[in-house]
Length: 327
Image (cartoon, rainbow, N blue to C red):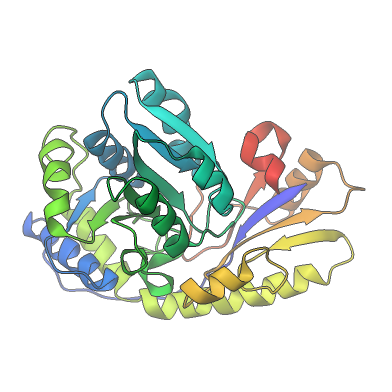
């Protein structure tokens, strides 16, 4: 039985930005570039995290192209890779990107992209961004792009564009907006010129444009991101230490714990371990029933505030797909 937990903090903030003017979206894009420490002009915001992910993938890939993608992703990204991309003629190799040998084996002459999610949803596995980027660029003579979905980490913890990645993707709905009251996504490039085709394709043709009001809400939340991430980490460490010492828990997955398989990588590339963690119950428990009991006991709000001011629990059991078996 496995449970994924987000421990959170409540904060209030006021912001004075025009909530209806289209320029508000441009202001948010500039702020996101500042957070990632790259020049202005290399960011495009979207109506959701999946709009950002699909916009980047469909703008950069063509039929026959090959993408190497981590085998554990946010469900929408995983389903897009397994079904939609393959149906459109792209080749997709799903590998454990924390294992560099699997990356080396998967890369071919047709590889155009490496897609990493770190820490990944929901098993909180960490990939060495610098090492993976170096491997793929070396094997393809620099032709392949490296994309990192850094939603779980945020720019406070990790700056993938300074570790070899070409693009970073965020679901702004989660930590960055932080209040559970808006949707949004973003793609940010290390070089602004690399965003031209994304702007031309996804920004004009795909229709997933972020509204000015959601941009304003996201900026309001982002103003407290640094403070919130400090508290998320404190809460994550406290909860993971409690669970690790609990007799009915067999394993805890939190990058801040020395027992985490990629703890040393996390220490190198993360300035904050975030608030996401997972844990596995002892074998005496039946997976689905135990997860449902925990969920019911916490009286989870049916409309979950993911990464916001309220904690949430996500049940993961065997019939939830391949990633569940990796807990």
